[in-house]
Image (cartoon, rainbow, N blue to C red; front, side, top):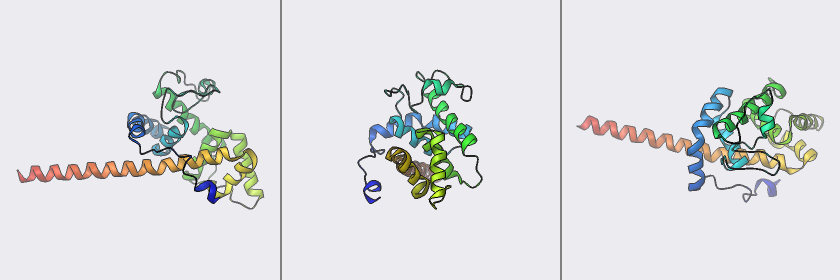
Length: 205
């Protein structure tokens, strides 16, 4: 566990100038669709960074495309019904977030889950499939762990059943979420301070 969670080499530098520029370029889209589909916009932005470094040009060998690395066939399914995700970051991000909402509504409609763990498990289902998520939670319950808590509980089932990929995927997203939150808080404080300084200067005139 120390080796896995202490491994920072798997986490890209979300604070780099290039990655901050990508973040600022698409963050309004994450705000828009996270609000529409009821998610923390920084959490889904962190997922986008994990998937593609927030680059719409990203393509995977399996055919996943864009910021959210979604298959066009998944996006075009009647449950999501969004096309053009290969060409438009707007369409791509909406499709990814709408698919997350579908996963939550169908497979995680459980009052025992809090919002944080519901979202983390939706990320796991996005990565490993909803059928596997059900297996992870069942394994946790049978093993005396909490099927409603991801870290150190349901993720143990994921590691046993599909290996480290899904654990690492969700963990990375949460690691990216922290600097995004700190960056946003810093920007908000700077904006507030600038407004206060402007108000004082206007008052002194």
